[in-house]
Length: 396
Ligand SMILES: Cc1cc2nc3c(=O)[nH]c(=O)nc-3n(C[C@H](O)[C@H](O)[C@H](O)COP(=O)(O)OP(=O)(O)OC[C@H]3O[C@@H](n4cnc5c(N)ncnc54)[C@H](O)[C@@H]3O)c2cc1C
Image (cartoon, rainbow, N blue to C red; front, side, top):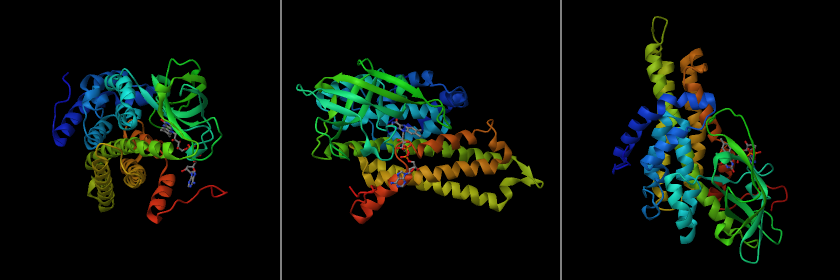
């Protein structure tokens, strides 16, 4: 195999499609059924350079654009959602945050091995009692005299957590107690740090090849070199930087939804031409033609929003407005596309044999991971009205 050489977005898309159809599609159902991480595909992605796709060339990556990344991820997800999700975790996850906000020393230390896949850095934000209310997080980094920290806390539902080499952890910085967004920053924790434990993983509806795990930090001692974004108990600056960085993750999430829904759409067209009822192909019924037309409209609109958001992100992160509008629309409308695909297939669509039920299950979880449409609507409303609307009873 040779590394990616394609230059134009269209060449890149065609190369990603060819690779995904040939190498990833054949086992797509198997990863889901066996709830198995697609290790062999992760190796292929590493060998071809896709894992370091967005990492700048001086740190061993390909230095490609966000737009190229969402195009590639959509193509991968069209053939195998599980493989695309693995690729997304490497491309848009913590390595993107480190690329944009990390110091030169941190980039040199972490990015070259993230680009080759030797480092798998997961993102640990959610906690048992802090899901949508991220600013309720209670994981604490006690700052030491040398600038290092001692980290204690418990994180939930971390995708790929059980396989990680490092975790990027959102935490509150001490020693003074702080609340809300003030004092939140982030550290990177190597897996071999004393006190770093892996807790339970849950069985789930979709995305079954990439389980979420609980991560436990029991007095993990970290030198100052592992502090990525210091939290200041007097300000919300650290939290704002991190949430902006999270936008990259959210656009990748959208690309996966589009790919899975595109597959459901294409399968539906093929099926309705083949399936006969009342002596004719069911594609001849206008009610079904319009369903397919609505699917096409949603796909085209979602793709246009995503490409615009990716273009606007340039070398940094997508804007909060682009991110919230795009993820809300795509998370909801791609569920509708997949649901229509099941309906168009009748009972067959309800069976495991037809991939459309898997597409729906995979897309479903994406409307929870990376922030829900309800919370993103709060962001959109805040930006539309030019003020924030506290969700807390006390208005803080
Ligand atoms: C597939 C998947 C992958 C994930 N990966 C990760 C990961 O890698 N790392 C990580 O840290 N987390 C991860 N998560 C967790 C995810 O970020 C949370 O599930 C999400 O933030 C929602 O939190 P919650 O599940 O606690 O729901 P809750 O916050 O309990 O919300 C329950 C419901 O109430 C709604 N709601 C809550 N507050 C409001 C409000 N103010 N206004 C309107 N509606 C509201 C929510 O939208 C939701 O519908 C993942 C989740 C999934 C499903």
